[in-house]
Length: 165
Image 1 (tube, helix red, strand yellow):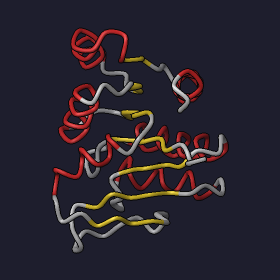
Image 2 (cartoon, one colour):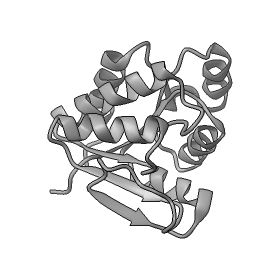
Image 3 (cartoon, helix red, strand yellow):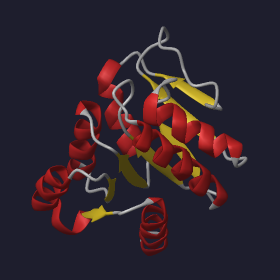
Image 4 (cartoon, one colour):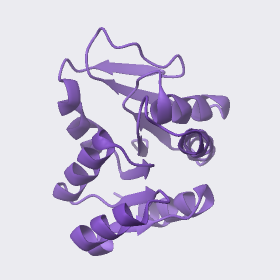
């Protein structure tokens, strides 16, 4: 049986400390559930924090990198170099059973949009009510709003259990 991959998407350099703290906790909780953490792989922001959290909990991490020159997080076990720049966002989304958007940035918005086009279910872990309303109007039942990390993990568990394949 293949491993369940959970994508944690979020800002790099522009990530807030709150977003990084949440991403770290997400990574830990995803690893504790026995799932694999997938991020954009870089050594900054949400990507690095989620990978570090997963590694701290003994989990497996995958990083989908834009090119060979991009420094990857030291907590990434499997760096995948795409040489696709931001187009790698589609790989992030298509490879994930569930996409968790931790915070909001331009790249994160593109990943959410790609996830919607791919009929994926997305969990928004953001305090940004404008983003919540916007994506909820676009996606309806495929968007879930999490108030905190515990909610995000509980929602992920429901989605994974419901959509087991």
